[in-house]
Amino acid sequence: MSKNEPGFATLAIHAGAQPDPTTGARATPIYQTTSFVFNDADHAASLFGLQAFGNIYTRIMNPTQAVLEERIAALEGGTAALATASGHGAQLLVFHNIMRPGDNFLAARRLYGGSINQFGHAFKNFDWQVRWADPADLSSFESQIDERTKAIFIESLANPGGTFTDIQAIADLAHRHGLPLIVDNTMASPYLIRPLEHGADIVVHSLTKFIGGHGNSMGGIIVDGGTFDWSASGKYPMLSEPRPEYNGIVLHETFGNFAFAIAARVLGLRDFGPAISPMNAFLLLMGVETLPLRMQRHCDNALEVARWLKAHDKVSWVNYAGLPDDPNNALQKKYAPKGAGAVFTFGLKDGYEAGIRFVEALEMFSHLANIGDTRSLVIHPASTTHRQLTEEQQIAAGAGPDVVRLSIGIEDVADIIGDLSQALDKA
Ligand SMILES: *Cc1c(COP(=O)(O)O)cnc(C)c1O
Image (cartoon, rainbow, N blue to C red):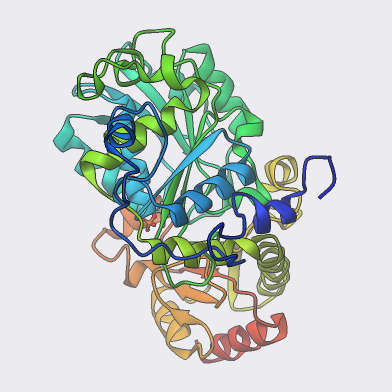
């Protein structure tokens, strides 16, 4: 490798991995073991006291997981990362690092539905309050900040609408108020957007989607940007005050610009336990190797499909930021010039019944509740994920009766369009 910083595609294949020192295995081995033998009693003591890094037990750390962490940290430009069993597991550990009972955080209203549930319902049991804001209206964030506000959370490219968020503007606002910006970068992946370069402090992912990319394994990750001063305000005692469970160690003082990732591991992952399995870490690593190739193909296919749909006489509208007349096109050009992602929605002129007939007539597309697979996926939210809502609520959530959501795969685009075409004829 040259002396220059390696490029993205090189990092996607090599970052964090060496041939196995004992066997010479070139692919990263699956360390399918729960626990690791100590050299001696002193070694064990220093591992448990956080004086040395090393493997103890797979709930806390595992060598296959470690390669995945180093690789994603390199792709995002962070200082360290922590992999978890799922994207939601990662989000739980992020907020556990920063929230105390009675605290609040601001979140963009345009989020993955599962995150809306986690923040709005499950987090209430910890007395962590979410305050919803409009990502297109900065004043809706600013007006809700008070002395118990601890963070701002947004998606870089929001699921399911496929709309881009002005990361830099929201980062500036957060920093003016001494708050960290947390960005869910699942839909864009670091191939399209690296939020840390636009002022984010922490990045989270569901690896289940584009990064793994093959629809076979659950996983999540937290990337520490190393940029936020956790000690300045006294508002983040998990990081800035002595930890009784580790002989009074102060994590930010000891671990500096990767203290957030350490805290998520040794306080969050250790005690809540959403550890990724070594097998899933291995499968996700295989996915990462082809992320740049897949992601470009996803975007190229999606743009062609969006253009084709827009011209179809049974389609009333298409929401795809890559289309030049889309209201999101300027933000897409600024943040993700390589492409607008692969997930978007469109409307059928004939509404609810046409949506059901269309989804049932598709042959190659899979009808399911996921995104980011090699395969093309479809869902009609009003009859599935959003069916418990009133029509008014569905429309407010961008899931009105006529809305269809697509996640465009990496098949031949002619076959993708062919399938859509025959199903629209039947709808
Ligand atoms: C799927 C998803 C999540 C949750 O991740 P899981 O791996 O399913 O727990 C979070 N955010 C976004 C944007 C997602 O698409």
